[in-house]
Image 1 (tube, rainbow, N blue to C red):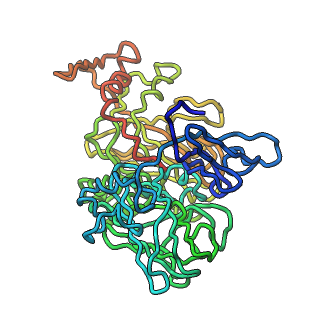
Image 2 (cartoon, rainbow, N blue to C red):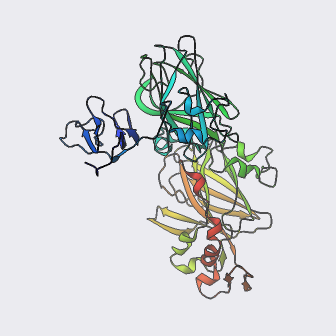
Length: 492
């Protein structure tokens, strides 16, 4: 019972449903079994154990966990597509997203909405002879994160940017079993080359994330033309979430994606292509952005030095690849140094870098060549993590050991890192075909004292306390505001 004078006409819940176990917003109107009915300021909510509205989804536990939700007054939506007229009329092209001379808010076969980033996207149905008046219903933009987290395998979405989020919708007035196309018009700056859907398919009746590229055999999937995507649907086929030829195409939540990291190493293509050697940090004649075993990036602290990692293949592991390359300031790693004198007199000017090496034969040895700016002469390398001798994460010097075949060797501005899957240097300590490494090179710290002129940061590099001799903790604090740039790794 609401205050007198309130008269809601819709109700929304947030949570899972039997049709989509990923929590999402959905309209909870009465369907004869569950949902909301309205009578002035009184809303009657109908629940059934285990059915829509029961967030635990368990029909046998005698408990209904009502999904978080609430009543609302629906905004005017003359064409019934689910997008309020006010939003469609605010499209920057005078409310005409498909440029046909008619306001989108007046066309049930066109919907313009704001995606999760606030940009406008337009959906336009293409009628057919059998289905001359198809209409859009329940257009609902959604954040893609929950769906992306359900990606199996996770590598399905590595290197992709889903900046526009997902959108769910239904197409009605379709002749049973007919084909229907939907033209998706994106902001002019967007040039997607992938499209994903979340839902069931004829080959897998469980909801899952799958790539929805065009298939000639089924006549379904996405085709791309600049900032436009043509979505091909067939009633009851792949892409129709209810998998039933019933005259309604349930466009499973889905959305376009753009490849921003072709080799999936975790470094954006634009970053690798900016390497001063024409994007070729290891000078092998191939752009680093096209090589999954090579990664070039700006270090995390000085932001002046380029670092290149190159995995050296072996007979047992001929195609090792880099993943999750992430430059880090490393302040926390160095503060964990025990004893603190471990980093006395050292300068970690290039910060730390974390990465994984995959496609390794379990237990194999793998080398990684690290190339620093030409004038650098590193003298040591540190790792942070567990070792066979100590299962607790800690900072340790990673110099080459003949006994284990692991550690760092130095040759001018190059460092050769020797790893053994499951051995010292592999942070997960498992012979599982994956080597994980957060580590950093160190150089002798200069003895002279310098003062920051205008940056508000003074750096002493005398050999007094370990925190002055290494000077790293202060350096990290000075550079931290400009160094932290981890947001681009969201997907994973």
